[in-house]
Amino acid sequence: MITPTLDLERSLAAQGYDLITGFDEVGRGALAGPVMVGCAAIWARDLEPLDGDDAVELSGRTYLGVPDGVADSKMLTEHRREAIFDELRDWCAAYAVGQASNTEIDEWGITYALGVAALRALSQVERELGLRLGGESTIKKASGESAGKIVEGRPGDSVGESIGNCGESVRALPKVAGILDGPSDYITKALNTFDAPDVPIPADITTKVKGDQHCATVATAAVIAKVTRDRLMVDLAQSNPRYAAYEWAHNKGYGSAAHRTAIAEHGPTPLHRVSWHLT
Image (cartoon, rainbow, N blue to C red; front, side, top):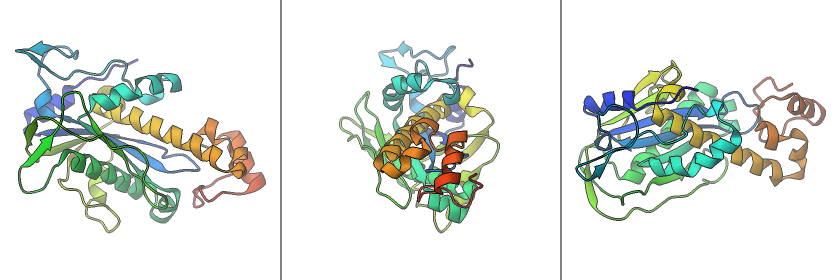
């Protein structure tokens, strides 16, 4: 199994970026439920260009290293993802998971829906950290705390938690980089469109094929998004007796044989992507 590094994140920090964000998606190919994009953010000032990726202490300061156990979420078991979930959230300066609902996917198409979901996550991360366009920001953040929020698209209310910040005030410079898993930048394409949220500071996006295998921020975002969506699909499966036949607790909305058979027998639910080939 490939262990992600912070090499690309450090390279972006050396180019003058102050906040480094990693993005990865989950649920693109599912037949039911939302698509989600995780965003994991770290401060460039917390990165030290040292050999190796373990956190080290220099001059009384601890620098950020790759969190233990992080890897491509697809290579980790569900049990392992759950086991490291809280540690990965704590590792981030801030994190969020943006969602686009099944109805938005049907209306917009999957690529644009992914872009809007990613921007929802980025907007939440920046607002949690107090970033503002066109000036300095004062951010209160205690050592070891992370700010996080789950945001989702219509229909439905937002879910998740927001961890309050306290402690020493620090200065943030508004220059943001993003690392997006895959070959295509769907985030920049969705920026400033009608359905996209306002983002305080747009990120300069770098795409990275297999970024979830090679970049620690992307791998972290992937695990956070995967666990978040899996938990939601389990909750949805239990929310209505009608949904039991579709076995979402097991297939997480993807097109298993049992799921497709249930659609053929019972028809789609309000949570299915009806513009897709479901059976």
